[in-house]
Length: 456
Image (cartoon, rainbow, N blue to C red):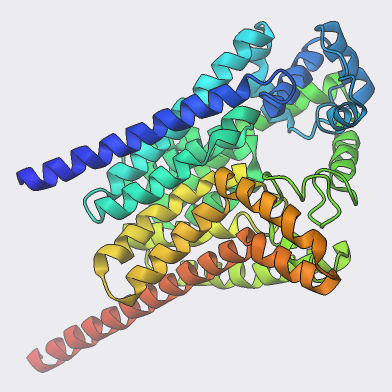
């Protein structure tokens, strides 16, 4: 290896490691907040502890008693108390999440929280380093910049302790193992765990490998088997203690997504004017018409048509590693759009970096489009950028009339539209590459057939 290349790689690795350190330190400081720190993990932790004490974790009244027995009290401030009861006491975590968190729920909260913080930081940093290793030989500067941008803007995932940090990391591990054909057994375990923790984050990635055929389909089916092996005992455990868990879970999901609640994608949501807003396509469409019947149907149709077209193409095309990374880039962007997601789920955009560096190394106009789309998607779902946008929205939109205010909010809340554009771009690249490969394969077959005919 040439000295210049070695020096470039060492500098790039140093920048990535520095970004990991910034991400860990900044996130850990925010996680120390006594009220909001590790709030998402705290919900899973106490829900699991509630179940282990033979209580119903999906019943807010029962979950409140477990919180209070541990020494927690409702905040004195009425607004914080209301938010606490909405977010902390309405468990929407699947039984499999409770099963996997059970070993930590045996520990004191202060220790379990620190272990979860370390696990999230280490897993996400390792996933970023793994992606960097895949891309460093093609376009080291571009890949390093994209990965550093994502890491330095991921502090909220540590601050809240959301499961999405570990889920995204495990999904990246699994995809890398399957595409690189290394440590496949570890890839099955990682993909399977991520699938049962937050299926709406991972299921499209898993589905791609199922459709890809060959050994990839075999790995996907093995992953499904592992997921079932985790899900069945988890459901049996929860059903034995809380037989009404499914309707209660559904009720909690509806309550959190109700008009004006924390997960409502519309402009009247409790979370719309915060940095951690909903990034699904419904959030953008609600600004045109704040009606769930409209924006849900429009989102499902838009994403459904694009995903069905992509699925058909995957079935028709021959699997290659390069095409696999391009397909996963489109899937990572599309995964955020059909249903509820927030910026912490967008750490799955690590899967867009390999495809971007392939196009960047190829040069031409696609290089710049890929760089613009990928960096735009990462920046628009980042924590720092979102915080700045919130301040702009609050200072600008309050002085505008209704129509102009909605237009400004679309421009200042660009994540859903940028994600849609990124997904469409990489889907187009996938179609273009596979069509070219099919034409070249057909020409090669015609040439062989002509040679055989001539020879005979």
